[in-house]
Amino acid sequence: MKMLFPENYHDSPRNLIMNTGYAEFRDPKTGQGFYPRFHVYLENHPQGFVVDIHLDQKQPSYGGGSHMHSGEYVGPAVKEELMRIAKHITGGSMK
Image (cartoon, rainbow, N blue to C red; front, top):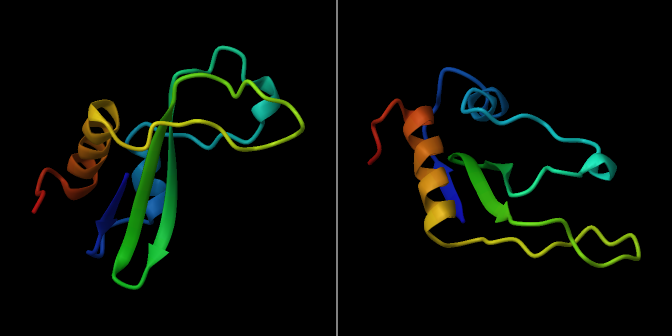
């Protein structure tokens, strides 16, 4: 699920998302006990930035070094978390 934030905010997209409680995760080999979890990606956009979010319920169950997973990209939990992020970033002024 994606949402565009088309305004100029007081901070960078990275800092804004970290202020909502997210942190960078760089070592997937230590993933024991890290599920379920939301993944948030930031994308540059000509009018601002996009927050792209999905929910991983469990660690991938296949091998071969693949980085793909089966995440939930829509649904109530994803929408609720995206709305929480948007409210935090916009200071509650959702349009």
